Amino acid sequence: MTQTIKVALAGAGAFGIKHLDGIRNIDGVEVVSLVGRRLEPTREVASKYGIAHVTTDLAESLALPEVDAVILCTPTQMHAAQAMQCLRAGKHVQVEIPLADNLRDAQAVVQLQRETGLVAMCGHTRRFNPSHQWVHRRIAAGELHLQQMDVQTYFFRRTNTNALGQPRSWTDHLLWHHAAHTVDLFAYQAGSPIVQANAIQGPIHPELGIAMDMSIQLKAANGALCTLSLSFNNDGPLGTFFRYIGDTGTYIARYDDLVNGREEKIDVSQVDVSMNGIELQDREFFAAIREGREPNASVAQVLPCYQVLHDLEQQLQ
Image 1: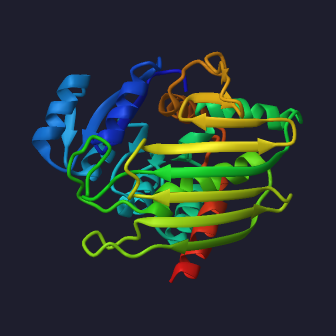
Image 2 (image 1 turned 60 degrees about the vertical axis):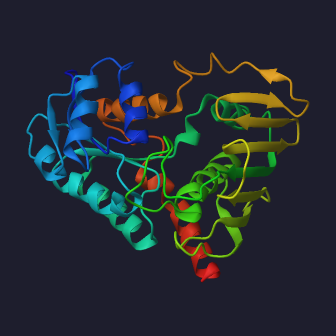
């Protein structure tokens, strides 16, 4: 494919806008349709980004013959069904994390991708963040062997709001959304499948209906360990912070910043063509479409993560 890749983006909220900002920097890609839950706010976003077609119905966008690919930034509970809807319509699809909120649906997406041969990718952004790419390259080169990851995923969330502080139409989840990032990244960085997983959680919030605190332990087949702490109760810096403990060094990744164990900064500005993980994720999606290949973070590659999440959910129940 040498012509412009034409994209429909579903979900004009906080993460959809991050994708729109990233795509602006990518040559040969045009967003031609924007799908949102409410028409007027969606029109406002579309106007800002010069997107001609606006709708509240994904099927309407999928019916546009010019649309080659779809990026789904919709509520978690819709991800799997909408990903399959896109594949059945003959469109390549990238679905934001998580691929699904249960194992059965994740498996169904992977099976349909295999049947259609289309590019289907999940937004496991940590694989693409320059800080994590830097560590991954050291591991791949045999310069670092991962012994342990210590990860903290912390937010302060008393109400159902998104990253922009706007009301959400759906409820976020520590296990199926936030833990998915780290479970996948740990196996990816260890270069070894997860063979043991344990989880405990705190009380269920009476209004949100979810656990606000969770602790997860993982072990890879090669012996590497991961300890993950998650909380919606943390009144402090928000986000996820990763400590990589290896045999030849310790590294701490805070989004796109990377320091060693002594807090000495490591320059990751030349790791890739951008410092924006979402943009790099989108570049991989479009490159895979053009080159007719499986992308990094394909739905098949990330499926083992959802098997682990399923096993952890069984423990918690």
